[in-house]
Length: 385
Image (tube, rainbow, N blue to C red; front, top):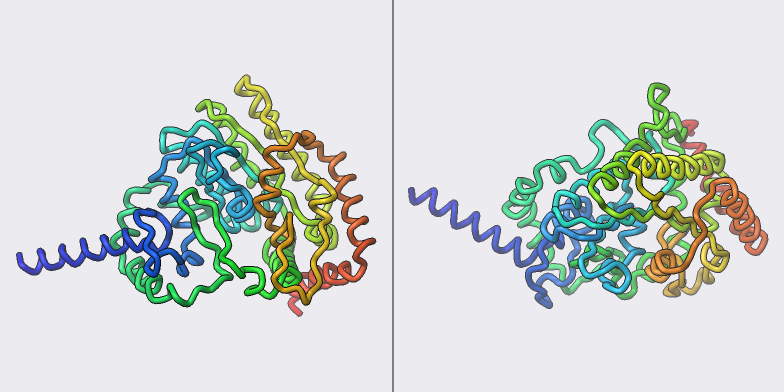
């Protein structure tokens, strides 16, 4: 009996430490300077922490998408999204992840509105396997929460959190109580400046999101189900309509360099097809439910997506609209949600996109070579060279 009691005391002590130190940013029970304000271990736990936090806060408004919305849409701003909004932007999210995130928010029983940032790379069926999504966090959230609270892994992360408080790595995004990520001071300089950040992201997208080896193609499904990936979005919309949840959709803003990379990898036709498919599915599901078609907007303002990069030597310069070629800033996120924008129309928007790409690289011709090089490296990897 004494052994059992001793083990129980140790377990409860570990749980208490994990709860207070909160290395993953799940509980936000206490803010203790010098103990837990900086969370270095979050880098490995975003996809666990956000669903668990959502299970606890039971949001009325959920923002869904990838790390683009995680950083770019400020759910802590009550004027923007209301007082009970939570950011469920999962890093590298596929549409399968977004469906799971939606179900987690819906299970809270208070969901009234969803805002979805739509990303081309999220619809690549090559990235969606049979075990996609966040599994246990959706189907058994209480068990997952208990495992997290009392696990030795969390305790180890808590220990590292305390010991690293005076050695802040400014490159690591930090969590907030509303889900939205924030950047430590000096983040851009720590990562080598905006130009380097753009180049790194473009290499990742070309290699891991657009042209995945070994097949190096981009498809929305299989011959048996050509729109399997988009089916996740269809199910989210159908469920939202059935549960009386308001829907707001937008295509994530992307810098002209990343749009140029899509063109350089030969995927612009597929990009336009994706935009058209999303618009069609949005309209179809609304009609089935007898509801008004939710707003689906695209944002290609030249001053934003054609924002010039700072000089390479200006390591700490923060661009107004973009952190890198993929992630837009909260300033642009607010603009996306507040400014009147044209309802997305794939063919019209495709013409605008091509105009923006041409104008950007005409103004910055040296950067075209950087984009072509990123596409070439991805193709070489596909060829096994």
